[in-house]
Length: 252
Image (cartoon, rainbow, N blue to C red; front, side, top):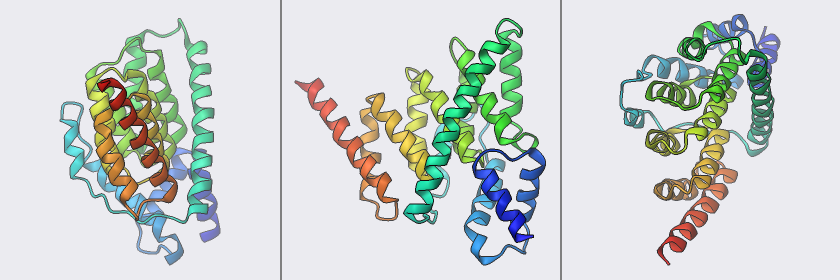
C-alpha cells in the first residue's frame, strides 16, 4: 500500500495524476494512518485542504492572505533541487501545451466562454486534475487583458492550489499583467507567505524583472532567514542588489 502511495506521490509532483488519483492521495493523507516518513507530505495536504476553505473570493482584498501561517519545514537541498527542476520542467511543458491549445482552439470559442470555463476549472480544484488546472491557467494567455476577477482567481490559484506546478503556472501567467497594480501588490504579498522554494524563486525573479523596488524589504527578510533554503536566500540577496541598483540609477 505504501509503495503504491509513494508512486502516486511522485506522479503527483510531476503533475500527471488524474482527479481520482488526487482524491485517493487526499483521503490517504487526511486519514490517521500516515507513516512517519510521509509526515511532510501529510502536512502539505492538510495545509492546502484548510487554506482552500479560507480562500478569499474575487471581491475580497488580497491583503487578507497575509494572515496565513508562515511556518513550514524545509526539505533537504537535494530533495528540493530535484523538486524545483521537475516543477520548472513541467511548467515549460505546460506552457507549451497552452500555446498548442491556443492555436487549436483559435476561432472556435468565444472569449467569454473561454473565461467562464477557466474560472469554473480553477475555482473547483477538488473536481479537476492538476493538468486540467494548468491548462485552464494557460487559457489566460489568450485574453487581450485581464480583469479584477480573473486576476484574483489567478492570485488565489498561485497561493492556494495544492499542486506546486499549478501554482507556478499561475505565477507565470500573472506576469503578463505586470502593469496592473493589483498584480504587483499580489506578488509582493505572496512572497510574504509562500514557503515552497520553487514559488519563492519564481516570485523573486518576477519582481526583479518588473523592477518592483517595494519588494526589496521582503527579499532582504528572506535573505536573512536561516530557515529558508540556501538557494532561495542567495536568489533573494541577488534580487535586493539588483533592485537597489535600479533605485540608485533612477535617483541619478
